[in-house]
Image 1: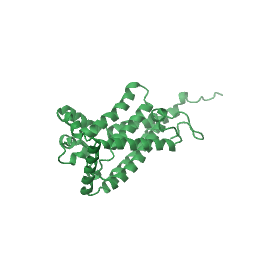
Image 2: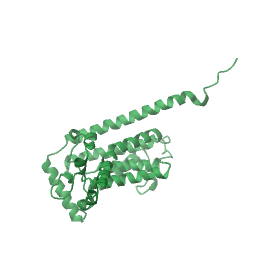
Image 3: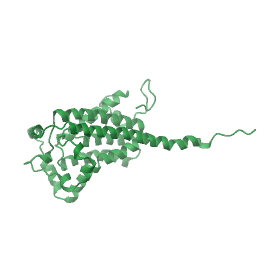
Image 4: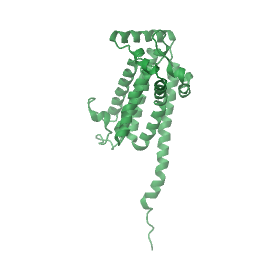
Length: 272
C-alpha cells in the first residue's frame, strides 16, 4: 500500500496565504476608513462659530509674533514666485497625505502587521485628542486671514483636495494641530522602522519633511501647527508602544526607529 504524500511546499497553506493577506488588508483598511470617516464627521459636527475661530487665529499670530517666528509670509513667498513650486507643494499637501498613507498602510499590513497596528493605534489616540482641541480651541487657518499676505494655493490652483476631503465633512477651523504633518510623521516612522533599503528609508524621512513645508507653503497652517501635530503624534505613538508592552525610555533610539523583535514577558513575538 502506497502512502499518499503530503502536498509539497505546503501548497494548501500557500493557496490560503494570498486570500488571508487580502482579508487582512480589507479588514484593517476598513477599520481605518471607518475611523477616518468618523473623525471627519465629528470634526465637522464640532465646528464652532467663525468668531471664536478667527479670534483664536489672531491669538496664534500674536503668540508667534511674540516669539519672533511669524514667518509664514516670508516662507510662502519663494513658492509663489515659481508656479512649478506652487504645484509641487499642492501635490505634496493633497496626494502626500491620505493617498500616501493608504499605500504605506497596505504595505505595513502585509509585511509588518505588528508595526502597522501600533501605528494605527497612534493615529486613533492622537486623532481623539485632536478632536478635543478642535472643539474647545477652533482656529481659522492662515489662508482665511486677511491682511497677512498669504495665498490659499490649494483652492486657487487645485480642485482635487475638495474631492478627497468633501467640504461637508471638513471643519475649516481646525488649523491646530496639523495632522497632515503629525500623521505623515507616524507613517514615516513606520517606513524607517520596517524598510530594508536606504532609499526606502529615505522616503520615510523626506515625506514628513516635505509635508511640514507644504503645510506652510499652501497657507493651510501656522508654523506652530505642525510642531504641535508632530508632538501629539509622537506622544500617541509612545503611549501605543507602552500599551503593547514596549516600555523603553522616550530617549531610546530603538523605541522610535526599530521594530519590536523581542517579545515582552508574557506576550508572543510581534504582538501588537
